[in-house]
Image (tube, rainbow, N blue to C red; front, side, top):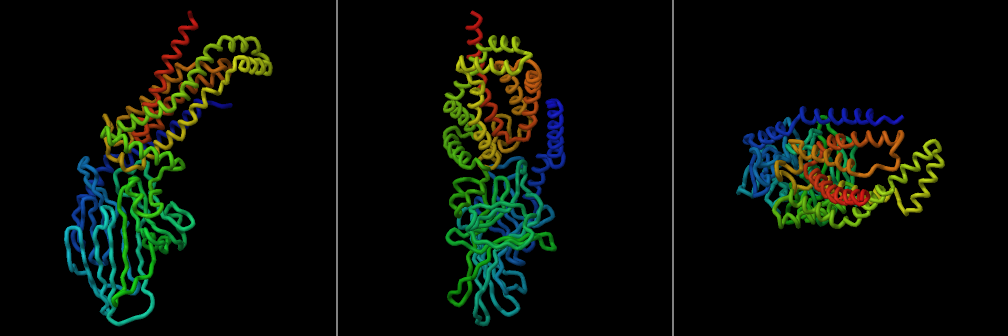
Length: 502
């Protein structure tokens, strides 16, 4: 027998356990403190720094790798002004390096030229070959790297260049990791977008594609070639606990030297930025199976934001627009409620008359519905379009960089959950109110009636628990949407009741 209270208790307990784990193992304040500490660590020794208005990069002179990379936040919050995306310490090992096959520098690189946003270094190997590396920013989020190998003794054949990420399985350092799903991401000639966990790479894999990198909430880091497909290599975990993935290509030979160009994207999951990087790179903005709807929402939200200057208010306006567009469906729903209220006495009479004959009861109910031209499920159909809209809003507010760190009313970050739980509780209360004002379903007696009554008490608090975990942006959408649904329902149903009593 179905027992709603037992189901509610089990689900609530599981959600409560997840909530406790999320808040106590590494709460938001701790995450923020850790990120602030990481950005403030003194990086000296053999590192050389270059930066622009968007990125802060640290190049290791020991091997020429990118060992640290920070992206400046839109604004400082709680002392955090930049977020680390590449690193090499106990918290996270995730760095990038270009290697020229056969070259191993016998001494650290020396700085040939250095500006705030430009670096040129070089080193020799035991045979006297010289490798020169140049780093500068091709776009605000793209680091250009040139490797040029000059041979001491002429040689023939191909020279391979490895453009490789090294990463362990630790979670990202970024403070905003709620709802984050860190994963490997790449595009191939067979599949425009692939995402998988590092742990799934248990043997060497080879593909052809335009880019490969690593994705997390709000950010993606990738090596790419916009013009041509490159050889993509994935390697399983080595003895040091690191996975390797990246490009393998032949160096070009010109003017007596081998050279190779590399472009490394380090940036936010922002639609207009991702679209200009490489083919299908925009799919790093993970919007689930409602990608098309979510992409449309981002365009509309950006348009609304350009007028009101607040992402929270843009969500409110978008919700109002949805209610206007979908108002015909809500009218159908409300009319169905009104008709059900009017038929309620006849339904009650049939139920009392045939309460001991379920077959006859069903036949009489169907005849009544047919005579009155009433579809008891008509009130549910208008709810169907709300499902993909809600899912799209969830993915957008979770993934899109536009909402990161954006405050609204008492909420400090629309991409994170409401720290004061006001919106989730408000959503639960309004759901309870909505159920209260709706006419009772035809099955107003017996076991079905008891289940319906219990669910009216169970569903609102369960919804509140679920929304505690949701990004505040999607909860705002849900609250405004529910409010705009309840008000006309209450007005029309109250008028219908007044008409019946006259």
